[in-house]
Image 1: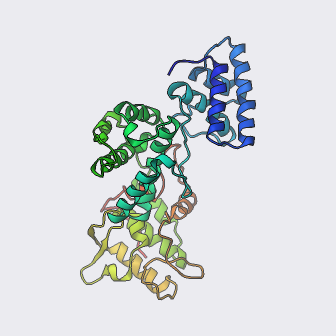
Image 2: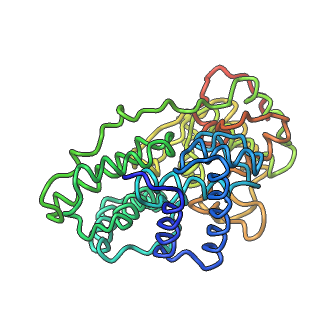
Length: 370
């Protein structure tokens, strides 16, 4: 996109924000903020907006020194950073890139509604889980928003160049999920072609994942931390017994949270010392060994901790009504509670949820049994 003088850039951005139906109060906030940015640029004798100018402005006016493209944004300056990034995005790509994940109430643009509805129905037909479908559609909505912002009115107007330009707008801001985003886009475009929505197979135009590969952030969980985490759990009370059993299943067997939530009493094959489940994500039947410490933890919870209930599920909430956890619960509060209690400091930017813990599986870890 042709580089515009900062004053003209600001006018275009504000016009686009208005077109996107940003509220009056939000527009006033942007307008007042950009007035300061323009004045700052004149003070620095800069005609054009640059990332360096934006960073300097945030540093001098808000004492913000973080690299906001790779570090977490401080809450106190989050809005200011967002407004600077909007200028940078529009300067580079001519669109305002939405950073916020869409919620269930997402309104599909009219020109793409037919294709999106058909794709959702196809996913349901293929028995995607609700969580999996929601995640897939949320990733796709970024692309749809981009097409809408580019005033593309029909899926047949999408070109290889369109796809390439879109990928350029996101690869610097979605490093950890880049492969998944590209896969989702590729599958959607293949669906459009196979169902005659598009004349060309545009899935071939989506870059391969290794072109935009970024190494995964390593888990914070080391052997001593896992032991500390498990040791601080009070196994003398019902909630502690439940949480201990859950965390053992994650740390020792690498079970997914969704599978633990849906685990049923009938899945526990005590005779053969194994847990037999159909994985909620893959639909594959999987067997896990009931190791000694896991077995005793489950027995202790079932006999001495689990509320009296007719529920077929192993793990229940410990407040009335005594029901299973919600299907979309991530149980993050459980691991956060004991991480704090154990005094485990999580380095900035590191994963520390149950999903990261399940990648720590070591058969010889020594843990205290019930």
